[in-house]
Image (cartoon, rainbow, N blue to C red; front, side, top):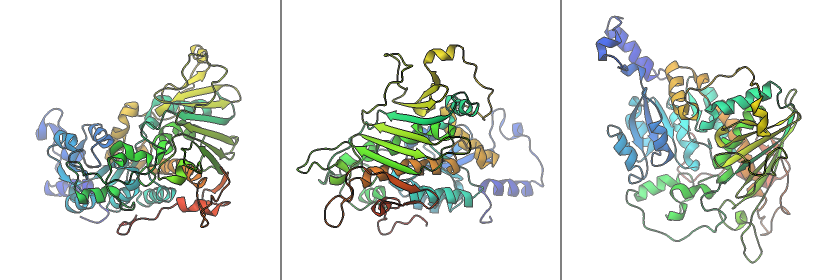
Length: 478
């Protein structure tokens, strides 16, 4: 098989040659409902104990799960039981080395700090990739994966922000395009996250490894992060609040919540960002990010976007941890401020529109306007199954050999992720100490961002968070 030839093309070619180019009817092969092996996509799951298990279940009838990889066999036991024919691995590198010929695509649902490493490793070996949100842990990695997707043009990429496939999310973009909202120059976004511990000192006590997780498995879980003792307070769902492994409430949910506005308003790179956050007490009343490796308990982040063509500049404000934007004048006191644990409010010169997390329930504000509202003619492609069809959409794009058919490819997901992670840079920079032990900045400071150059231009110390240092033995490119 040639290096750049897909497994599916190889099978089709060799089968045709062996059969003398004879076409065999499908009913002869397997009867009604039979799906030929050449029509299937062989998928491997990496990180299948949590959301990854749901991803694997949502792949649809045209996917065959051939391998499963998880560092914790106990946590992944449900997936192992659901797909008993799949070969089991702890190390994704071993899986791709030993099972690579039988794998067309991989689903990656590990903690944020290993997303980019695994995705790049798979793409360099010709595998289509589906990566949970946020696409990466830092901005440099997001740019690298975006460029890799451009380099490997035949590979189908998808980020797991499933709300991007919701029809109501897509409709918002059509409303903006049709001019229904008028000029939008202010967007407010909130989430009920974090729903895991944040704003805490890092736990240093060593705890016994859970059943199913070996010492080697724990080392793999840490990935490029500095080695440290196992503690249950940083494991499973709780890792999201710790900077070495997760990206906090913003990284976890903004790929769902900022997404509707990012697409509808064609936002691109912001020019500046400023952040403030909650604190916990120590003798100097330092902020949480300064005295621990934890994301703060709550935060407010303001992004400024430049004009885009005939669209005006946009101010986008993000709040989390119990902070919610002001109730619009058009909403009744008992009307919800969003749905599914979050809300997005677009202030237009003609009217306002609101949608919930995952782009659900897009509506005009006040809600009463919807009774006489005539939606514009649909102009954007719908995704079968809405958010529930996000994984199937990726599989179908692979079967069509059409990367553009994917709902949230890296060409879109990469810049979205970069924008979101810039907010975390603002959060962390506000509490950086210099060599003299004192804070570099006097409280929150507006950072100026050169998107194409991938650099903070007015506070050099902030650039340390654009690209993190990997632990020895770990590299983005294999």
